[in-house]
Image (spheres, rainbow, N blue to C red):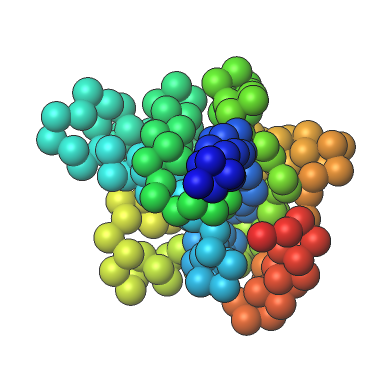
Length: 212
Ligand code: C5P
Ligand code: MG
């Protein structure tokens, strides 16, 4: 009985000590980040957290003090201050019921402010296992998001004006973040101009490398 208790306590301490593992998912709007994250969730049991989805959810809460600020950023294709986004991600990670503690964090870190805010708040609280980069031309991104808008995505930012700004900000703000992680040897780059099915074949190879 004593031995059984010892094993139980040890396994509790071990699971408590395990910090969450994170894969960041980056790429232009419409590059297929969400689609591939859904595939990864289904096959490997990762938890998918989309920074954009969390911000959209926060925006619609009637008593959120940040609703208007978030909507303004989304409409302009600009990036919400990291304190807001990072705390939404942190809370979602803590509230996750999934015992796996492996997260695909989609659409983050998007700029230098995101990167620094994450480093400040999350160092020691989560381990970055890799960065998945879905590489897609500006033209293809534009075409896919406009189609998504026509099919009723319901997103206020799937229009040509906002998309131009989102794509410009992606090039000036997000590409340097991808380069930063490339220098650290953390980036897995996928040709995201292919069909979703073929992109997922490449993604699976990467997941097998980083573990799941
Ligand atoms: O990733 P997604 O396309 O869903 O992001 C939509 C919008 O959400 C972005 O254009 C931006 O305004 C906001 N966002 C943000 N910070 C992030 C991710 C998304 O401000 N890290
Ligand atoms: Mg998305």
